[in-house]
Image (cartoon, rainbow, N blue to C red; front, side, top):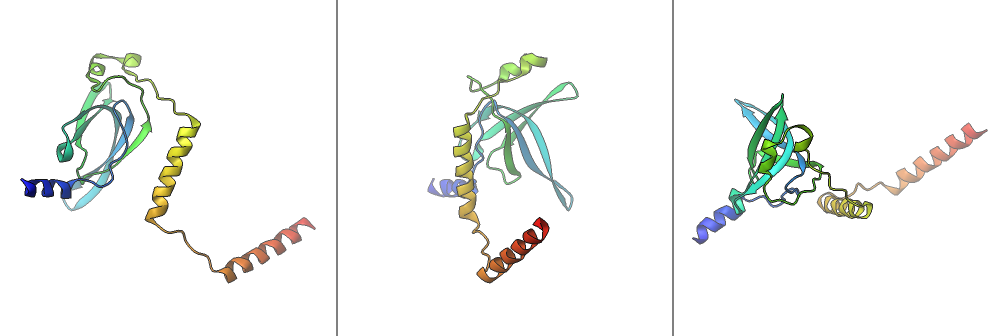
Length: 160
């Protein structure tokens, strides 16, 4: 039993994108055609999450040429490269299957209005996470002081 859990743990993604039911998302999905690989973007509304752990899936619904299309994506699949939240949704249900019967404006989901403070906090958290991944580029002191001197001379010449 422990071997199964070890295999499942190795297949789970370390960082899972943060999105929830009702969000309009862009799913970047890797398509393999022979020797070629390309990323296809599927945009729609998340209507359901199912299962747990490695087998967790989410269902995305979109309207294509007037026809509703749903696609189920495995959350921990290596083929799902990224899930980007386009618009956060405000819903009070765990499953949005009722949207299948709605047409036009009735199928719309209210947008979750996020305060500026919450956006700033989320942006700061994302910036700190990216700062941990790659160190900032360092500029040698001699080069930066020479650049400043040339900029000061250029601005003095243009001001006269």
